[in-house]
Image (spheres, rainbow, N blue to C red):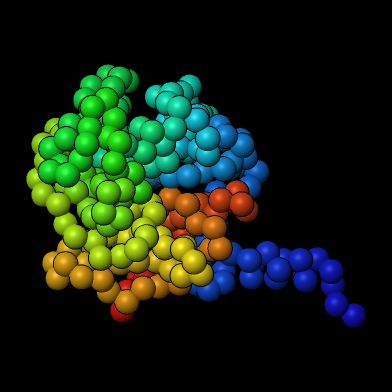
Length: 250
């Protein structure tokens, strides 16, 4: 006779350990649902003792303290936008999918708005009418922004420094990409588009894509790579998991 509890435990294990057997749960559902937004996370970054995150909907930017297990009041309220990236003492915010704001964690204020009109083809005023921000990553004084050009239907990566100065634009020859993270010369993003469900890996040295990898979940959102582990939120299961970054290497 089979023990029902044993079956249930194995079902749970299969849910988050497929297709990566080394997957581990970092935050359980009972923790995640206590976050603002009911646990539906669209993007996040783990920085020391904090989880910076943007929940689903017009909620804004929040910070969860792993030590005290408390959520701050809203760091920045905004009506729309999916993506964030945190580095140094800054959080870079996708505002309404067409504007980048810099939130200073020391002064608790927005201290800079990126001038995206520095992108040669961008049509910008307060916001940019012909581009959509699909992801943000920040590392070593470079902000990487995955943008969709609505006029040409092309995707590219534009690079700024932390002070909002335009550096360059990189062709990103893919039909779709969502979320963005930088690690060791590679940009990671998700592709779930018309049945193509995979992790994209763009090598900034060769300016080409490496072999894609399987998604760690049917509904991943957000990427944060910390201490050689790839963290992702499972949107519908309301958990945050991680896998060794080595599982995504060739």
